[in-house]
Length: 201
Image 1 (tube, rainbow, N blue to C red):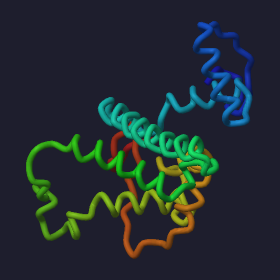
Image 2: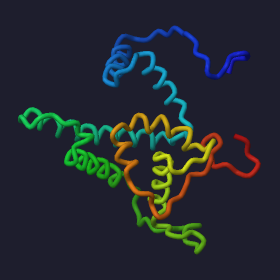
Image 3: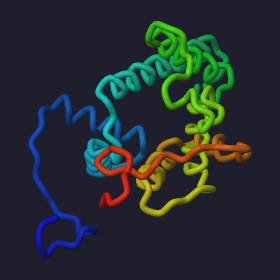
Image 4: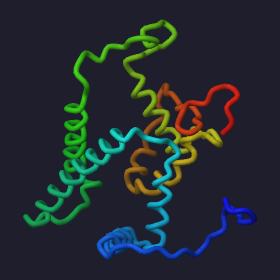
């Protein structure tokens, strides 16, 4: 932060960009009903994530998003052309289910070869339900999203408001789910790595 400048202060800056990029920002802003400035600030903020993803996972997330969107848009568009009205695929049970199928297909084909048997630490008696670690972690993250589990200063609490606001109707559906019987919470992190005793945030 610049010395003497409050963290909440806003400043005016000028940037130069090529016309195709400006047009993309304008289209994105209009689709969300926001200003170009707000859209640019939001995209810049997202480029500084609280958790650094491996590049392979960031690319895989985009691949999944494209597979889901192409599937959903195709179903929504064809139904509209055929005279069956227009309903966003995000709120259409059939279209959304097919989009999930597309995502699962990408994830399944990307799995490494070999049996997914627990190994190392996860074969010890001290780790219960090693076959369900992924589900328990997902349930923990979703509990943060729902606002039922708050840990001030934790990494999930940093990204949760931004992500929940963008999820729209998906966030509503996730929030309506019951609290799971058991779940795990991600550890607080420093520079994308789990905190150890003595670490400073």
